[in-house]
Structure formats: structure tokens, C-alpha cells
View 1 (tube, rainbow, N blue to C red):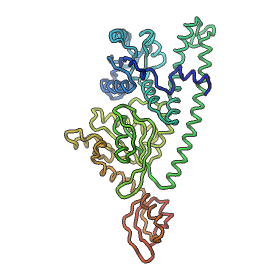
View 2 (view 1 turned 90 degrees about the vertical axis):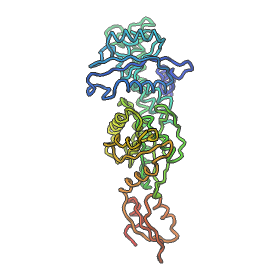
View 3 (view 1 turned 180 degrees about the vertical axis):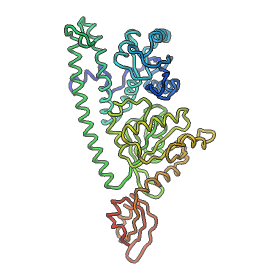
Length: 452
């Protein structure tokens, strides 16, 4: 990486933990909007209180101390400051009262909103939105090269249109006129020149990152093709962040995946082999959790990882049955699956944490419109045999029957049948071992299906 790129990454906090992880915890005020027309608003049907509660959990995950919140009921965002002028004055007062130095909005702010709000709040107060906060958390939790590339790409694409604010501020400091940077007409100043230089460098870096991620996608595509040839089905564990996906993968496979009571505690995908009750081996993959208001460009940046979900044979949707917004969380997951081209795939719904409910059967009402519900507790292991049987029964629909006689010295073929399919019976004959089983079509052709 060039010196210029390293400077830009430091300046814009690209793909590394930013200030909220410093020893002195920053103090944050949260701002949410209660939209008068929920169907037309970015907040959808989520109550503002519930959405702000989730935002507070995101802030704590990033290392911030939440010291207050401000809400306003609006029909549409204010063009200049997102919230109204009177509410901005109230926010300024709350910042002074609580000694807060970070203000986080629950919706994505435009560059103009961010610029005007920082001007109103004064020096020393940072204005972030939900997207910037999620990106910071992703940067903290990306452990693999692939994860770091995807986070860096998302950060650059998010921050590129926001360069104007920073360089306008720099131009004022050095006494130049940044007319071009602010959209006006005038003499080109040093701030504008630097801004355009950095924009070109960032665009080149974005192009480079996309090229690297295309290589990752190509590698994953070759890996998936090899898996298909081997006949090993893939089950993608999906769900709202913090629903218990990593806990479930650990319970099924002893995967040793990090489990924390934080949003996006794990970011990079983890794949483990799991043996189903009938003996068939499948791959379970745990991917990044979903969340409401997940930005489109962030989903696009993680396309290399999320394609694993779109290409899988079965989706295992883990839902926190104890969460008061469980139904809305499920809707957010289904919307994201549609956005990545995974809608319509076979799905099993794991209603998790039912051990915390007074009457676990009530959780079934939650899943009345969700496919193949199973009550489980990933932490205690309750319901996991039923879950694996449900997964096996759905995957079995893709298998075809075979009735073959294997030579007694071909134990390798019998092992292959056990790994890729389900043995229904096996009996020795004079010619060899007669095996009746359900196997993938490719293996059936290899075995000479129908011969007995």
C-alpha cells in the first residue's frame, strides 16, 4: 500500500478500530425519529424506542458510553439538519449538560446533514450515523483478510461523498477558498486541490479492493463447485445479529466460535462439518448477522461472503424467540435474504432461547408464517436432535434411491454413501453387500443406480 493510501486510512479511520475503542470511553447521545408515516419512512414498522434500544447496544459494542437520547416525530427529514431547528437547539443543550462528545443518529445522514449538525454542535463533538457505527464495529471484528477487505471497501464507499466536509474545514484553516469543494464558484484553493487528489486516490483504492474481492469470489466459486462435485450439501445459518447463531454452530460441531452478548461479535464466516442422524455429512456455515436498516452498499461490499448464503442448499434461520421485536427481526432477515438473491430457498426456522420462556409453545405462534419451525435452546442443547432431523428430512428431498451390490472390498464406496446420503438397509449376499440408500444424483450415476 502506498504512503498516500496509508495516510488516507489514518485520516478516515479505514478498516481499523476508531476512537470509541480508546481507553477513555467517549460519551454518546442517541437521536431517533418517530416517523408519522412508517410505511414511507426508512424506519419501517419499528417503534422508535425499540430502534434506539438497539442503537444503544451497537454503541456499547463499539465501546461508547450512552448518556442520553433525543427523539422527534417527523413526516420527513429536515433538508439541512435532518431533525428540526428547535430539536437541534435541544440537542446542543443536552450535549452541554451531559458532556457528550459523540452524537449518533439512528438513520443514515447525508453529507450535508452531517456538516450542518457538526457546525451547530461545535468543535469537539462528532456526529455519526447508524451506518458509520456499524462500519466501526465491523472494522473491530474483521479477523481474516477477506473480512478486512470487505470492511475497508464499505468504509471507503461510505466516506467518499463525505470528504467535502473535512477538506472544507482544512481550507478554512489554511486560509484558502474551497469554492469547488462546497459547490460554489471561485478561485481554486488548496483545500479543493487536496480534495480532488484524495478523491482520485480513494477511487483507485476502491477499484483495487473490488478487484481483490473478485479474486475472493472466484476462489469461493471454485470451492463451491468442488463441494457440489463431492455431493456435500451446505446449510447456511442466517439470522438477526445476536440471535444465537454462533452458539448454535458451537453446539452442533464444537466449532469454538467466539460467543459474546454483543451485536456483530463475529463477522468472518465459519464452516464446520456436522453429521446428521442418518449418517450424512453436511457443512454448516455461520455468516455475519443481519440487522434492520442494513445499508445497501454494505450488503454489496460483503457480496463475496453473502454469496455463500445464496448458493447454499438450505437456510437455517435462527430467531431469538424471547426478543420483543422478534417478528420484526424476522422480517428484516427475510428482506435481506431477498436483497442478496437467497429468497425462496428451503428454510428451517430455529426458535432459539425457548428455555427462557414461561411457556415455550407460545413461541410457535411467533413462527406461524415462518417455514418449518423447531423449538430449541442452543445454549442448553434442547431441541437440537429435532432440528437436525428436520434439516435431514428437507435435504433428503434432493436425493434419489439406489439399490446396488457393492463388492466386499469396496468399503470406500459404502463410506461415500454414508457421507453423502442415507443408508436405509444393507445386507450381505453371495455377490457382495446389497445397499439400499438415498444418495445425490451424481453419486447415483457413479454407483450405477438401479443395478442389483
